[in-house]
Image (cartoon, rainbow, N blue to C red):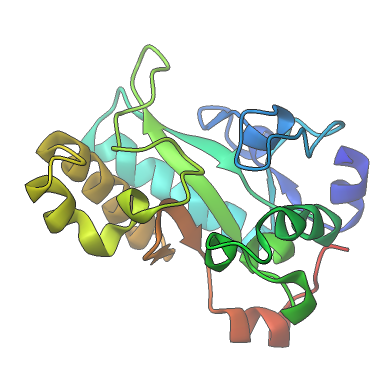
Amino acid sequence: MALYMDSLGLINIAELDNSIAISLMYTKADNFTGEILYDDLSEAYLHPHAAYALLKAQEALKALHPSYSLIIYDAARPMSVQRKMWDVVKGTSKYRYVSNPNRGGGLHNYGLAVDISIQDSLGRPLPMGTKVDHLGVEAHITEEGELIRNGKITETERQNRILLRKVMKAAGFRALPSEWWHFNFCSREEARKKYNVIP
């Protein structure tokens, strides 16, 4: 699949900046689908516009915390994989967390979204209150005050989320309210007008 991504003009993040860690969550079955969705992809790819913006986010993070680094859990995602994800959640209460491929999918399907977190100098992800890929209110950035009051996340975890949002927003990314780890480079409307879907 890497050659396919290359052929579409997408950029391999590791080749752009190897200080950004990569650990694609869909190369393992430990995700919300319970299946391996990328059996032939271990690299994170993004559209060039998003890829170069991500470099700015890494620079912003390093300026604040030189020993920290961004870690990518998912980036460009083919629509064929999006369909598999949708099949798992359609008809359930979790459907709102997955973009419907029949309605054009989401920004991952254009290489314009990234699922990301921060790791320390030892490669340990900073605690964020939930694992990446948690489909539930505990992952919502709009509910963090309530989550702290209810003991669902800690103040340290909220501050780590705020740091992630700060560096990503500084680079031009937009946070997704329901997933602390998900950032879009542009709106869905802009993506559909200016960019091509990854089949």
